[in-house]
Length: 302
Ligand code: GUN
Image (cartoon, rainbow, N blue to C red; front, side, top):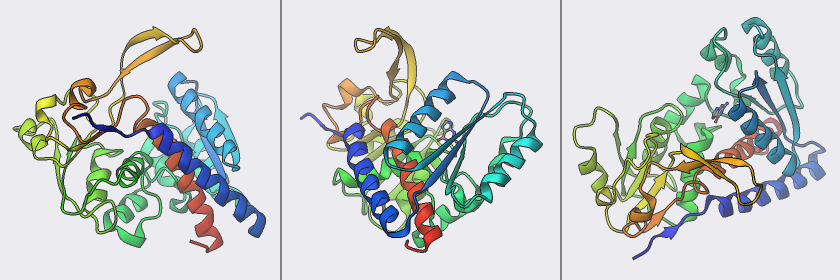
């Protein structure tokens, strides 16, 4: 049997269309559009390309978008003042500080300075706490875990009572997605296990999984024999394993590999996400969803 391939690129298009339509409706009724600012410090090439894509997507769905680029040697004090400016700007609903930040800046201090009601990344401790409580408390689920849950729901995978195994315990993916899958509600209600580098028998846990979510950052970590036949496999890994020339543009591009041996796993799994083109496209999409939500909270219509 060959698994159904969960195409994040297709789901992204659908959700971005839904967001665009809703933004147009709100604009007509309330005369405002969501505003997103991305703050980029320095010229890290990966960060620059992520921010460019975020701004381009925000423009596409009809948001007001602001890209605020700052010098690599900006002081912590000046960066805090900049955040304060956007915290007090009513036309801005979402503030995103692109990570990582240079060494002179305390990342935690910066993230904590963002107004939790504009923290569309969901990284502020208040939003981490809201996620832990679950239900209507949750304002801004972190974007990658939210994208994973959206893919699972839209693929029609049963999660209620399902054994979900999460590989990896990062603050950005492993811990929040584990927490989200055990909450009450659609796309959740699961029995969740988190495995990590100190787990005694990772394979044994993975073999029990009806839904296996892998965010370890190790290429081909998950072997086909670790997968239960018919399981849903979500591969969050984006590992650069080399370079090639793009057939489309003629430019050098990275060769990406997931944490799961895709070619072998797709013969056993019921559903599987490819890398690239699976979870990746969902992260920015959910950032747009969170920014739209933030405006709706502000207007009192959500
Ligand atoms: N750097 C890499 N991924 C992310 C992300 O999702 N949000 C922010 N703010 N920075 C990042």
